[in-house]
Length: 203
Image (cartoon, rainbow, N blue to C red):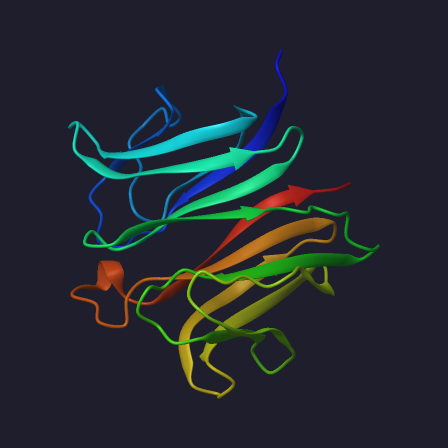
């Protein structure tokens, strides 16, 4: 087999209809992807690739952009922005094993019209500070095997824009919390929200 990278994908563009995702001419998803859905890590040939996003069931191109994958590297890829300005965000992942009894959490701001935001544990520590659109934090350690409520706050204020309640965080796991949606939303489907994905786990 030629050298490959590992790539995950999240559809974080709030007002897009269902999509299909291709790398070059190779379709990645087995089923059309709705807003908020993601694909776990899959193998992708290394080198310069073209990421193509289409409206499912049509040949209408949402976005076509290039990305370079290094051999044996790990990436998270996001479709974000809006139908009028779709964008792709690529993050190189460093999935180190958390310390004993700990988990690690990264935060990324994928809301195209929100201000810079911070991620905090309700009643506890701030895990990421002032992340502008498309910016992400490094992985921060938290105590594992515990349940948390996370808050996405405007800037460095206590104004809560989205809440992720009652999330059980397991020891040895590596997570990404992603903030998405629109301040100027037109429905509950595209309002500001936060979700969590598992990147890796170690036993």
